[in-house]
Amino acid sequence: MNAWHPSDDVLRLVLDEHADAQTDEDVTSHLDECELCQTRIEQFAESSHGIRESLRRETMSGSLALDTPKLAAPSETAWLADFAVSFLQPTDQPDAIGKLGEFEVQSVIGHGGMGIVLKGFQPELNRPVAIKVMSPHLASIGTARKRFLREAQATAAIVHPNVMPILSVSESATLPYLVMPYVACRTLQQRIDTEGPLPITDVLRIGIQVAAALAAAHRQGLVHRDVKPANILIEPAVDRTMLTDFGLARAADDVTVTRSGVIAGTPQYMSPEQARGESVDARSDLFALGCVLYAMATGRPPFRSETSYGILRRITDHPHRPMRESQASVPVWMEHLVDQLLRKDARNRISSAEETQRLLEACLAHVQQPSIPLPSEVMASKRPHIRLAVLLAVLLLASIPLIATNVWNRSRTTQSTVVETRPASNPSASQPEPVDPDFALAGPVTESVWTEPTTNESTSLAEIDSQLELIQMQIESLQRSLEVNEQP
Image (cartoon, rainbow, N blue to C red; front, side):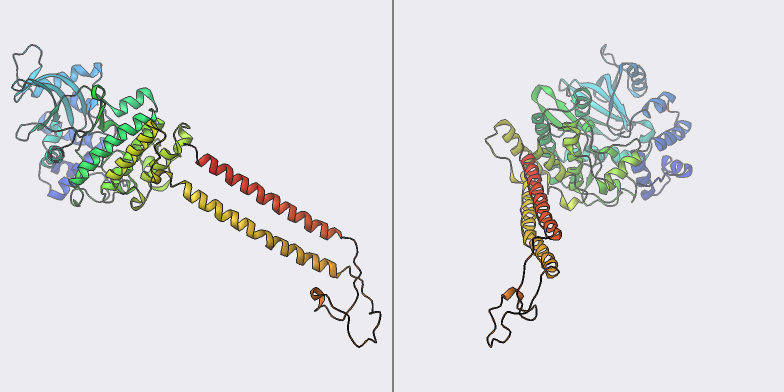
């Protein structure tokens, strides 16, 4: 969470490819999410390579999630098309704006900090494609090119229906690009923005597919590191969800890529360890998945603030707001499942993406057929409550004799002040009269004359009644809590 920014001299060294390898990596990692430094390096690149002013102004208009292409608004389409034409080859196709390699480019889909996404057509295979082209100001940085191409390598290693595949990659071109299938879809973020909280069945179905995609990536030793609704595509026609944008993906044992303290990812969906700039593993993706489930169910991410720094502090130092406080219709078991994914300590989260997928599938089966029991893991919250209730009830019941003993002792003390004593009626008798064991140690044998209960005794009895009433109220409160916890 530090505020490290490379100096102008360092940026120029990186831009001119004169920096050492570690500095290259550090700066490139920083550029992934720092708009300020992206603007700075683009200004330097403009002066050196003549990049268009419109690219600097428009490309930097995205959010912190700059690796995710932003769908182009109608007002942006014109300048994006003009920019695309500047690096495309001419074409004789009337429905195309230019040509890139073997692909006829038809339009601009969107843009982000790493580049723009074009809709293209591959004549040889007669199919539409999506082409992600790297921004010129980053293409001039050797390390940035490697990072861009890492997405293709990472994704190519994952063959799974819920992962957006890479069809081909061009590394030798002036501007590197990736080719992906063109899918008519929208992002999960767009759906949440439009609809707000999603039905619980949709939350579970989407969550299952994202968990399956992560499981496939983790089996290849890859950590996505940027799981968020904007990187989840929804294909309505086949009810399919695809995880995309593996540009930040890393091998789980890769500790040389990112400088310590340089944060990569989207703040609202980062894990605590990622927000602290520490090394991450697959469990970091599970935390992000928990954030996505939370956002789908409530319409908002679990950690919010006006600044990125504020978000990071909330993630690392503060608990998230309970789901049912944000959206009362969320089932208790769903809240508990997400709570397990959002635990601050990675060791305490659900163990794997496969396990998360299994739990989500079991929960969906229960929603579709209530006679099917929920998995015990999501109902585990009941057991601690029950154990606590039983323990507290036992302690409360055990306290009754202690209360009574205390009152009895106080009563004994009171009685000693009101007992009248007199000599025994036959002091010359050789055999003593039977003695009450309770008073055997009180001194010489006397006859006791009892008076009416005193005010102190009445007060002690009232205290017992008060304590018993308090115990009853506490037990009733526990019972109500358990009843709420049993709700589906």
